[in-house]
Amino acid sequence: MGAKVGGQAPRSGARALYAPTGRGLASLQRAQEVDLEAAESLESAPAASDFVQLICLPHAAEDVAHEILTHPFRGAYTEANAISPDPAHHRRLRRA
Image 1 (cartoon, rainbow, N blue to C red):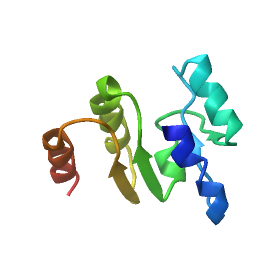
Image 2: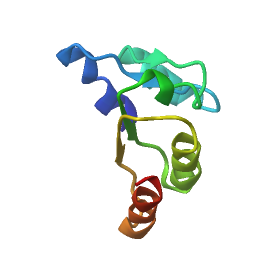
Image 3: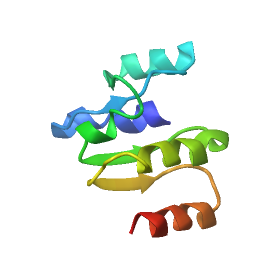
């Protein structure tokens, strides 16, 4: 799903980054098919971004969100994972 959503960014003139580290071959191929730009790391992507939309497998959502939100980031953050609303709400409150 992330590749499909991120692949829409260039249509409006935006660039879309993804973190390739730890991704499977199928994920990497989907990202390449829609011309997503590889970030150096998950940690470096938010610093180069105005907007972060987190889309990953539900079992990894908490850990990935924590990685993003513990690094300097002043842009907009959207939680787009298939998790219950409670954990997403608590992350938002910790950032505020």
